[in-house]
Length: 459
Image (tube, rainbow, N blue to C red):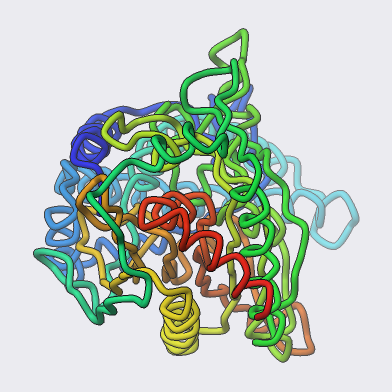
């Protein structure tokens, strides 16, 4: 269940973001004289995405996600850019031919004709001037196209429900709530299980049995993932703007990511951002990497803190905390088919694991308006929150296709690393948001928390 206020802000941010052009770390910025080249070479597959065969599908994608975007203008600008690219390539070839002809005369391979040399010099000067003006127009056209094309969302997966969320499974759970619904904050305050930090109302410390339960849940899920063949890694929590943008987040939006203070605005496109244990952790690990195909699928998981901006006041206490403890999962796949199979397997595995934890839960596929721009499909596992009288997300598995790989140059190939390179397809998710799960568990019954703790220790 997505907070209504958060969803409204997300939609508003998407609309504003689609109309704003700003600096990006994913492509070179500036004129031909002072252009700052990016450290990655992005491939947005615009020839295919903006083709006559696919433009209708892209338009429907934008509409379903609630993104306002002037697609027709982008198509026109892209045609201008392609035309300038052809002119640039022709001029570069002509310059190469003139330079080669002059070199042949100097080396004596061609007759030393003064008139021929003067003609070549004249042609070279003319080409230089044309190339200078063409390159200036090309830089501007490229920035104009890429700055907006980067805002295009991922393709929607065929299984994504187009209008509203689709419930796949439900379970009643084995833990029965006793008495009237009460907030976990009431139990926590009464029993001394939660301490609020002086940093702010959404920063907390877990105390007593609640802290012990957190550790036990982490141990339990970790052992389950290890037994399933996933490899545990240590992931970064702070990222450069390059990785943030590569994963489809707006680095300048306070609703999406924390940004370390930058005194000068022009440095924001190369700043540091705090997101914690997330897709960004794995994307940073694999940026500009080329993996041997025989190592795929590459299955990993990590345990750590996740940080999210406080954008929803409707979720109190642990439901709305800016810092939560998460176990995340990630798989790098060779193609779309393997990514779909992997997502289905991971979803089934995590759903079975959470069902066995005993809380009322459901498994859903979310609608396009709730997807991030990098997601093509998301399966979400939610548990019942008695005090909120709704379901809250505690786990999810997302299919990103090759969306992130095309931005951050993540490839796979055979034995020869120079041939047959293909983009890696990524599947990421949350095996368990321990903080959210504990809030729901505490609301069902503190006594159940104690018995749950003892039973979990025996798992």
